[in-house]
Length: 363
Ligand SMILES: Cc1ncc(COP(=O)(O)O)c(C=O)c1O
Image (cartoon, rainbow, N blue to C red):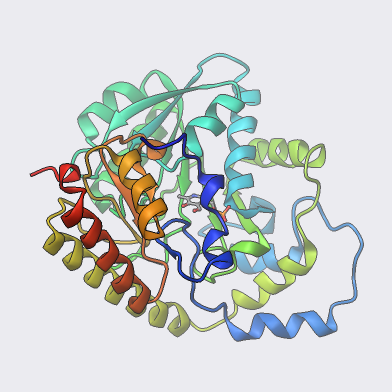
């Protein structure tokens, strides 16, 4: 029986033991844009920075968002801090009137914790085939003060249709409900362009962690056209983390200037890996959705905690149990590793399932 598993148990382990194959962390293995390294030798400024974030970075970001200016952004320690600040700001502004925050389930594992830490309550709506069921969404969102949308999704790898996103945009706008759109995988959509949800109550959080493979630098951001909300976020950040690392912001400023071809080339690599892992897992006999973005597959696996534990202890392969994402009978595989490692890791999965783990298979 697996001991109690937690995300922090596995982070960094593959760097210590080269024989470990990690399908665990959502950390891109691809290199960041070369030009970000140019910043380091010439960087001399080590004072506090603006709490809201460096003006050059915010001004550059504003060019990517309609009707926006630098004042609509707050640069944060990854999108993680942007999510946290957004939820706490909403909670303070609403002052206890409505407590529910709607979370499509399965969800990114931090969401319920962040909602609760902000003094609110997660309300769940189950995804169907990895996508929002709009009828149920409509019923449940009415009693909530906010909803978190994550398309492409971690852990499902699915994207919401444009039609659903537009319906959510209209409904939440009509009801005056905040939409917190976590778009950290917006550049990693395999099928189409991203659709940016817009409106007076929309918050977008994003990050340099995935698109530019700069996750350890911890640069993310919050965007909103709601001035009151922006000010509340700055107010909370002033008394918590204060400014975000200014060297890392300068590097992010360089990253954002790179041509679109960098992202297109990375996307080709992700699609190749997606195709390989998807086909291979189907051949092994697992039931899974085909990812349309991000870099995760989420197959059905019975006794998923035992699967994760046995595979780690006996075959040195790291995967994450679905329970962390609100889905007990699934396991998350990140394919942020090169294809040779994916191949080797899947060979070990196959061996485990054939030799002793056939009870994990659902059919
Ligand atoms: C959906 C989602 N949101 C937010 C984050 C946090 O990323 P970061 O804080 O590095 O921007 C992650 C990281 O895996 C994620 O998958």
